Length: 286
Image 1 (cartoon, rainbow, N blue to C red):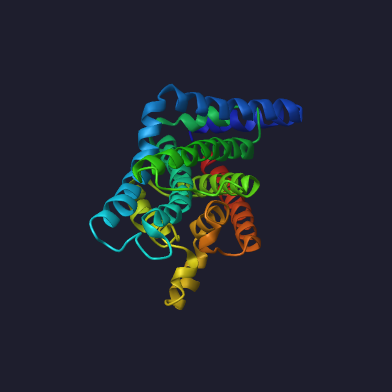
Image 2: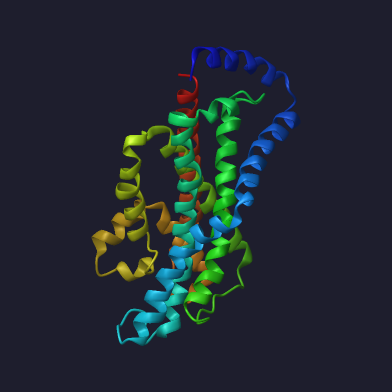
C-alpha cells in the first residue's frame, strides 16, 4: 500500500470506530453484496467452472468404469450406484475447499500485487478485520452455491443412479456452511502469504494433497488396512468435510464421529480466520 493510502486508512479508522455497530455491519454487508453481484453477472461461467470437475469424475468413476468391467464402484456392497453415493459427499467437500481458495486466495493475490483493488476496500468505514471477514463470507457464499451445483452434476453424470439420504437436513446444511467458511478462511490465509510467483505451487502442494488424501473418493474407514495413512489424513480438513457430508447423505457407509467433525471444523475455522485476519492486516498496512 502506498504511503498516502496508508495515511488515509489510518485517518479513516477513528471514523470507523465512531460508526454504530449496525452501520459497520451494513457496510460489510455491502462489500459481500458487491462480490455476489459480480458473481451473478456471469453465472454461466461460475456453473461451468464449478460443475465440470465433479461431473467428469462422477461420469468416469461411477458410470463408465462399472460398465466396462472395472471394479471401481462395482463392489458387492455398493453396486455401480453405490460408488456414486460415496463420491457425492466427497466431491461436495472438495468443491467447498477448492471454491473457497479460488474465490478468496486467487483474487487477493491479484489485488495485492496488480490491481490494488484491496486499497479501495480498506477505505470503507469499517475496521480492517471486517474487510477480511467480508472476504470470507463472500467466499463462503460462493462455496455453498458451488456445493449445491455438485448434486445435480453428479446425478446427471452417473445416469441418475445416485440416491442420497436427505433425512438429515440440519447436519447437511451445517456441514456445508462450516465447510464453506473453512475453505474461504483458508483462502484468506493463503491469499495473504502466497506471492504471485508461487501461486502455481499452491495447487501442486496444497490443492492436490487436500483432495486426493481428503477421503473424497473413499470413506475414512476404508483406509483401515493402511493404518498409518488413516491417522495421517486426520490432519486434512477436507476429511472432516467429506465424512460430515457422508454422515448426512450416505450414512450406510460409516463415518467419523460427528463430534470430531464439528469440533475440528469449528476449531480449524477459528484458527484459520484469526491467522488470516492478522496476515491480512499486516499486508494492508505495510
